[in-house]
Image (cartoon, rainbow over all chains, first blue to last red; front, side, top):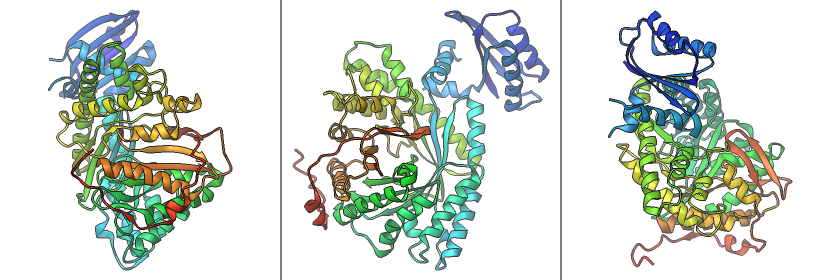
Length: 89
Length: 449
């Protein structure tokens, strides 16, 4: 299953390192990363593949939420189907 | 390949514009629970609901987490109870079974304590209606609805007269809780069989054994989109609403299909609705104001609402294989901060609201009136609303709360029910009109003027 991870918050060192470390621990593959700055907010979007992961999406999300609290940013993990459904005919 | 702006747009809709799935409602047929023993019937009703919907709440939570979209309500609707208890009686026992089942599976409301009496009222349907004050005051989660009119049958004025009396009784029976019992009863014209929204949801006789109906929402998302096209003409306004409604509906369709798989149910419909909540930024009234009205209730409000209602449906129907329910824009007073403020500033009267219901999704919804409003006036309000539905071939409804012991100010219900400002009704009487009884004939379907 593919999913989209979005990270939104104030820019600071180590955001990408922390999130990707967290994903490496549960064998989630990062397929694409893009970043942008919206106003003074750092925004990172990651496309990930969970098919070989040792954890289910709920567990991966729990791990990411811990990172979100530590880094004081918002992190969302969403099945990519929601975006395909809403934006593609 | 997904583009970053599309991803951010969806995230923004959830984060700042209150995009959510308003309800996943499981419709359950209770026909196989009918027996000639009321205790046995109630027992089977309880068991069937717990068996079918036991995982409803958990499933909703799983899907909300998987797709990152809040699913606000998980609810159950059942076959009209008047039919289930017709043989064995025991309507109150069935109501208590519904209440216990709802509590057991962790949902806040269960709908279907209902009767369809638009053409005639049988003895058992009358018994169910007369049990409403006791049932709605002694249960916590049971919701009721009575259909008193249809385009094909006309308006059953005997039922309309009775409902005025019953609503007053419910108001008195729940006087210690600000007459809140009345908020759990909807009086319909042209009720639909697949409505997922409370308090008027029931699983119609033509429905499957276990059906998933999903109600979408998102007034804040539509408002956000319209703020991007300030001053543009109405073709742009309509187009913007359609495109946004399409996206919202697709989210609902995806969630519905996944819920159907996980719950081993049939797919019913997507209700293409804009359902407000009392939260700021989640208001249908604000959308009308964004179109250029100083306040909802100003002249132009009916036209603005007509455009909104139509564009939501046009955008939504392409996004789902089956649209249904009460599709359209809801304009409940107490549940929409913009509507509450319009009443408080004197911009919105019950008369203007009635005109707006001719083009909205349902009708006079969550209207508080003085506690001393007579039963005949309440019946007459129901009759007016039913007439709009019957003649225009649409669903209309009345959910009205005469607040016992209060004649002005507002009533705080909290949660999704919000705050209801008490609205003035006409001081002129309708008693003799309601006393006549009988049935207003079905309207003619040609010579439409």
